[in-house]
Length: 414
Image 1 (cartoon, rainbow, N blue to C red):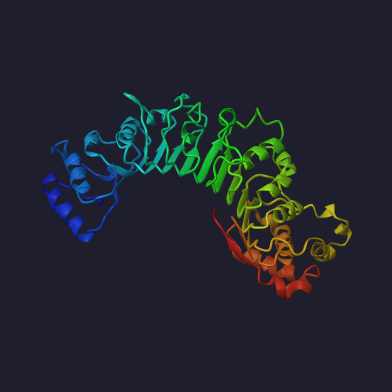
Image 2: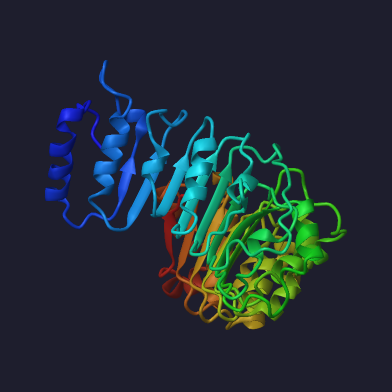
């Protein structure tokens, strides 16, 4: 929708023009913040425009991106049978919640990005009882503050999201029970959520995740809430076991921003029972080079590994006195391994770690036959490549230079 103000007299011509240039349009995005109403025109301006535009399409996608409240002239009664709805507002969310509820029977995708004052429970708490979303496949709820708790709603045993496939919750759950997980164990394929102590306790209390409960859950991404996890986890081993048992057959797994990383590291052997993982992200879990070796060995199907970089403890092996012997030591003790492993993504990387990071990457390239790519969230690729060339030419690696020059580097922004 362009910026110029539209007069009501021109709405019919405008919608005909849209139909002419996009006869197969199946998506509408309305940006109320950029739509002006001419002085003196009727408050039905938006109503007429919206209804005319909706007449152009069969499957309706309605997106609202606005930094303030919805315009009062936007008549929600006109908005029915929506298939996709995305709302990103900073002000009063009551109209948006009402819009989602009145389209609950048709919605397939619902994305709500809200201010800290929203009560997510209102999505399912209608005037005549609980609201069911029978066809909803994607639900994403994001909040600006994890410190502001919505009231925790208990919904009994009713199934409200029976077809959910992708669930993204970027703030602590506002439900005190397993509402979001009830009745969709066989359809849920992607889970991306924040874990805080009440949420973990709820999941355990309702036995939501078991070794066989979610056969199609292939992507699991978990983040720790700012208030830190306490009970029921006394050790990192218990926490890692719980996180891995959420979708034990998941091919893509992320464990992000967890405290107590030293304890989590001791639980890495648990990965051996989850050897189907192909993409693994461990953010703020303190892994050195030998931990990387253990992870890659534990996951024979691993393709991509995302980790934070910490200086390696090369002194942990007897060859510390003769650093040039490291390649020989690693080759004789660990090659070959990770036959499918191809890329190592370094996060929270800094320039003073160049040399150590490159040594680790080159050692991995020696023992992993298909490893040929390293990325970082530091963008100066020329500096990195110059350091890599110098390291390959050093006494430590020059014997293996021909096979190591295949290693590529790319500055990466996650």
